[in-house]
Figure 1 (cartoon, rainbow, N blue to C red):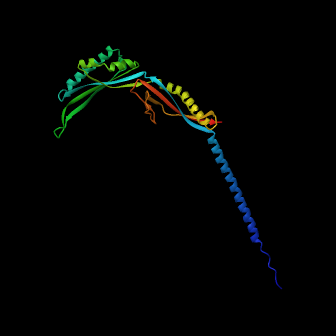
Figure 2: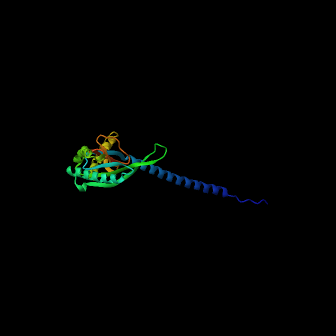
Figure 3: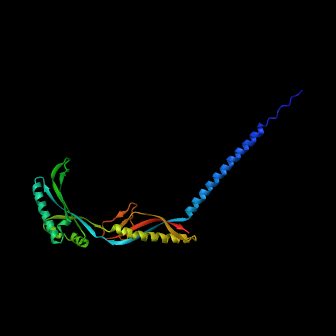
Length: 254
């Protein structure tokens, strides 16, 4: 008598289980894809809702402090060093007298030590000491900018008195720069807002509130100069200057 073999249903069960697994994976993938798409759309929309622009403002200022750097010197022979120092001492008194006669106060005068440089002759294939150069620096710092500027151009009397005197530099500074920087900040933001308004208006949008702002470096330049620097600039060669500040601002759009 033939025995009936039991029907094996493992194959059908496994197919049903495999189909369920695929469905679960597909569902999770769709959820993740939807979330990712939603995030991208949200980010893109957030970027579209703001506008970044750069604004600037500048102001012409007049320097209120001047530094006058000058020096006098003597050249002496190998055996004339002692005489040279005596002459330097005499020259210093003449320079101080000249400055005092022109209204420069002692407190505004800074005197360096005497510097000595040895001079050599290299023309004969060797080196032999030929003498010395003695130098002494004088620095004057004053708030009377125009007086010092004019005086630096009229030092002929010292030359006539036998002093080998020369101006090294005139440096001009502005002590109210921090306050000026704050004043210009509001103007720079306003300029940025005006620029943002023109850009937004071209696409039918309006500028809303300020979202964020960062201040750039300060540029202190001669009037009408365009030589700005990424690290900031501070001109000391001119009395009249322009202070410029830039602002990078982000505005909301509506």
